Length: 265
Image 1 (cartoon, rainbow, N blue to C red):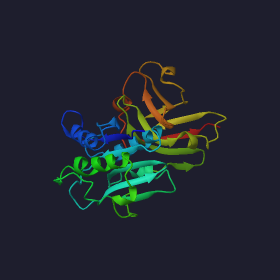
Image 2 (cartoon, rainbow, N blue to C red):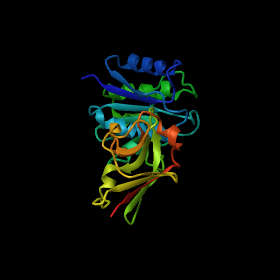
Image 3 (cartoon, rainbow, N blue to C red):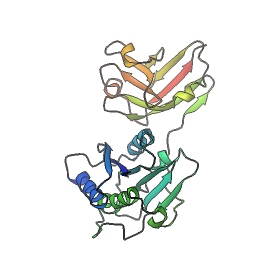
Image 4 (cartoon, one colour):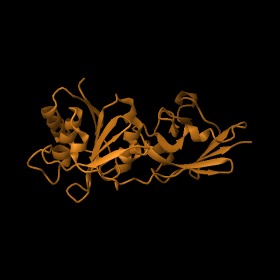
């Protein structure tokens, strides 16, 4: 069975960078399938990339190689990593972009990519996506030996994800991601909401200015232009505005806008 390689990058689609990576992959393993998860991560958006990876990787077949290149420190001493967890492979720079996905698994094998025979020559100090990560992804998709990539690497970078605070009858989280529709996705998972007493319903406070009296099941349950809160398809609490951008209408700020869910008893 041909391998599958996914791409998450901040390269956009107006330049040749993504195409070069795909060309290297196909030159090494022509039968593989390449899936663009997104190439529209904001430049240098490490947490955005890590969040997108965590929300998407597990929908792919076992053995898929997930390649993430958001690499503002390319050419420095930061390590190049390959990881194996949950039946998947992950390839990318050691800057935290892999950490939210890897953190879901208790057993992880991480290696520093140091095998020069796999890399594209000459090696550019400014484009490891093409010269280091793409060849490594192709090597793994082709069934290459994981242990031959380089030595084990235990001190890999973990991004600090905002914590959900649990209090007496409430949960407090943050907006951690805004999608292209302007919906604010929080770090409050559906399972965490279930820990709150809900016999009298739930109230959602967004920042200091907005209070929502209930959770909706769909966007269409709100009136056009009306703010709402609901559990999105990713399993996390979302703040939205029907037919408009909640980011713009409510001035949502990633990492800053607080969201509090209170029990009504």
